[in-house]
Length: 178
Length: 381
Image 1 (cartoon, chains in turn green, red):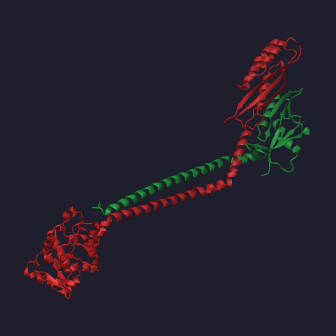
Image 2: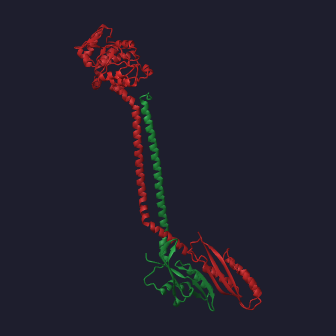
Image 3: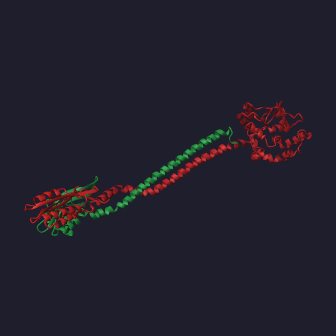
């Protein structure tokens, strides 16, 4: 009954409109999905950032704990005392302490507010000694394990009464003011 | 015979190319005009209009169908003038048009159906005299006067119904491609005036309505959903995004610091390695440690490289009271020392010097014995 000549154009029009609607609905759904996926990606990205940030946050605490701050009254002797050789069972020669190289620490193009300050008591580096070879090497190892201290080369010598060890490029990492 | 309702209907009829118009009499469409004339003549059934030369004829059922048959009509179709125009537009070929009430009187007509119902029922039950009955004229006249002419339409319709019991020849109308008009009872209160068109338009209107509703529904729903999603997104992301914006630089600094700390906190085995060298050498009672050094080959690269290579060098002196056996014992010790420092130890000049050492053993003097090598320390990942 509906399929009459009079109704045909209307029905055709309706079908066309229905198809357009279908397309719009499909398009809207696609947009919805895309938008949803994009927003989810952003959310995940931000969540990842947050997790990374929280995971790395302890680095700040370690940073302050491991690296002594540069203070206005810091001089060469206090720098030497900062190494605190006696704590590691090592003997040094504070009278001979002299200033070595200084530089701001860089890593992977990142410049830290951290200064590498080197000291030496021997022409080549920081001289430490002990009568016991084992104590000398153990103490040196402990010193080298400290994050604020760095060295490049160790040279061991047998002296008459003791053993000595020259720590080449003995440097301290000192953090500047934030 | 012409059945003319009004000017519009007449125009519609004229546009219909195959409309068959029966007879020559003119039937006034205006009920009031019939009523005003006040004449119904039988058997001629001619009514002379006052002041006019036109013939007015009121038709009973037999007249309608007989005239229709004579005119070759294939169906009797009662329609308001809109229907005629529609039929003309559709180029239907069989239309016998009969007087219709005027559109502006439809409402009142419908209202008065009830009033006329009794009379119609009388006729349907044939208690009303038929056209051939001598009482017909009087009864009809009485009816017309009583119902003020409005009965005419009903009368004709009932005539039609009697000849086509199922209505206006539905099968026949279908055959010729016409939509059958509905009987008044099927049309409900609206008596069919204009109902036909509405019914025809119901499917496309309904589809269009559904489509439009669907369109807006889908878009409204999608819009609402998108708004909700966006709001949800904003609620969830905003705090984190703010945090991100504030701490983005801080995060990079943290990453760098963490990496740097990881490097400087890495246990440095330089002194331990050196200790191993020294202790091993000290076991060689007949050898004296002169010098031992160890350094990372990468020159304090702060551990950027995953592998740190160390170079070590040990210089020992062969004591004067050496003997061949002690030297021979020293050699495997040196080999063990190398192994203890790692699998990648290379004793650069060990055997070479050992060869030369053996060669000079005969000379009772200090000789230096130098061990050099490298070892690697794999950084834990």
